[in-house]
Length: 153
Image (cartoon, rainbow, N blue to C red; front, side):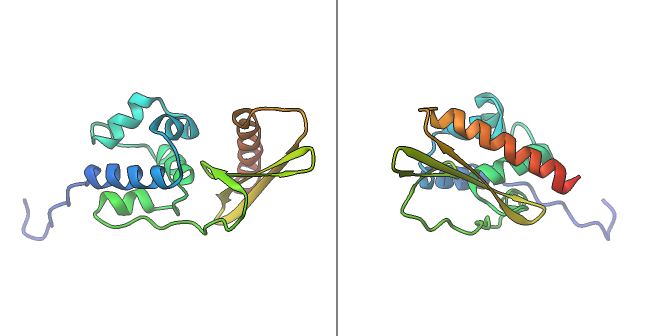
């Protein structure tokens, strides 16, 4: 190794695994829920947690969004630092996996907030037809993705 080259620090996948575990428990998520929110298979998520696979940038962004971490948090953890939380939702409503919902009369109101171009974007849906939370979350995620495409280009 040349004299002026400094060694590259080893990436700490053990720290990433611990931070992801703590955060998913705080959010009341199972590993399966986290995999579903990111669109990953359970095996792919396990491979990242154990350091057998390096996540691509899209996967990193999806993990950060699902866990409510600011952009760059996964890389900070891998380098031995701490994640940065996005602004916390203060609400009397129930939350699960970043989605908030509450009842208003005969309707259930849902909100899903994700960062787009460095700013929070919230998609809302009022449901009166008994759709499941999972179906509503998929619909809101599509709205967020369409907004991301329009706003980020």
